[in-house]
Image (cartoon, rainbow, N blue to C red; front, side, top):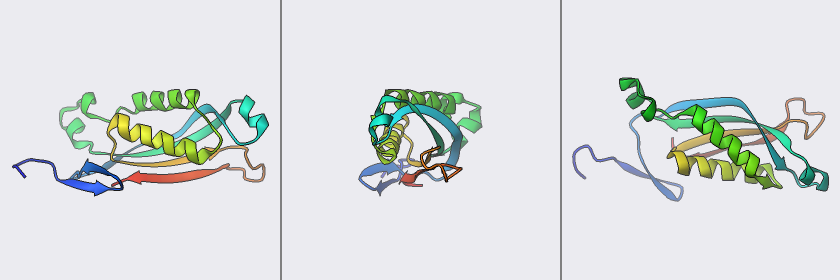
Length: 139
């Protein structure tokens, strides 16, 4: 390996550059509307999901030059998440979560993502909602 070449690490089934420093960029409480649910009545309506995203990113290059082009642009990322939700129609929140994380990691070259997906109102007795939390990639 040459001087300054990235060190690679195998993570799950992908090979990603190992970063000397991995910070966290987060987006909490992002609400999106989508078609989600296994019941017939759910297939004809749009429902709100609440997303908390934690994204691994090295913030030092952006901070060093105050350079937005080197930052993980959470506004653009949020718009992409909302577009994904608008276009999606899944039976399971698990499928929504997996596909969304796959898309974000591929399109934004994010090496690590933790997503908490909440479906408010799915269980009336669960006032905070129900859902899934997944973590993919290497930190």
